[in-house]
Image (cartoon, rainbow, N blue to C red; front, side):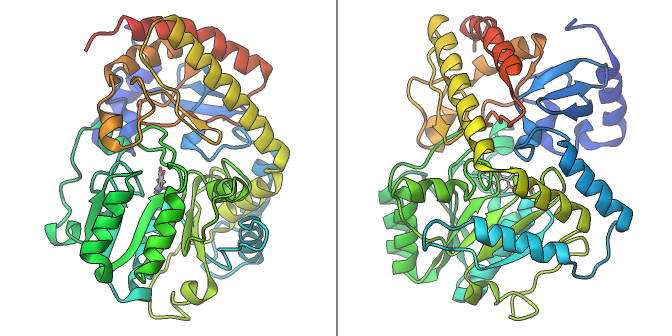
Length: 443
Ligand code: PLP
């Protein structure tokens, strides 16, 4: 079928006539894998259907939010009920109180409770942008430390060495970011304790915050080395800086209390000052949040001097989807997703081994993906050094067999609780042909 034009090609042509690149978020354009993006018409459970009526088992899950599977009936009903009561009020609602409480209650392990107050926004980008402004307001300092290959949204100061979409496009950052703003961000290597020590040794009294993905998943999946997140917390604290733990992707996806919760349970104890959430917290609707200790969070307007606002913040439809999703995201859901991830990661590893492809299957909780390198990358440089040309044929072979993977090797594969025996068996059966395609790829 590849090569024939269909409704997706027609739509892509039409889209490019009115939308830059035909997409509203760059990585959707298939830039790194080539071919026509699938325009999706509907999604249910573990499956998506494209504009030509073809169905795929989905391993994108809307880039994370669809933890329960697409269009979970109870989430859809909650949104419909909310819509019937009014789409947006620009006034506080009872639902926001409930969701903030849910978040604060879930993000605790034993006595450790980093989230006391929660501010809701609409996107992960807003959450990290606000967290950074808050950290600057709280410390009276300007500099921000971020890690190469970590993505925290597309605000100006965060587009230096920003992984995934930017990595896919092979751009160092972005045009349009004024040099003086970029200069406020210090980019260091991930998983590198010496780089962390060095940046604080040189700039320690000017650093407002370190922002870090709780587990990095935008340069492929790259878990923090044991102790690295705790080291960030301790180093920041020793220098009067804050630690912003970005759980936009991992929050409520890998564990009821996020990747932080997973680490607490494995004995790595640390307390971030601000945590950002997105994706799962909105259950597929535009919602994100930041949370932290009350004394820090209350520096936000109207209680404090750090301004932040939003016409659609805490939108009642998004809040309804978030509440329903978090209520349905029981320990059983996480156990189901964990088991499916372990099974698929093993099948992926076996298929690539059988095909003789040099590879690793990096994991962070239930997040996993593929890296075409002998060892799982620990840094952005290592992630970029892999044989990424093997991904496009692998991706297309999977798609031909009805499995939709993320269109970039630098993205995690997302499972949902709706991926059952039938879906997993189908994915497993598709892997050998995709591995063979990867094996015969040439740079
Ligand atoms: N932070 C992380 C870790 C992310 O993965 C993303 C998006 O993928 C963001 C922030 C930005 O979120 P949004 O796309 O909702 O602006």
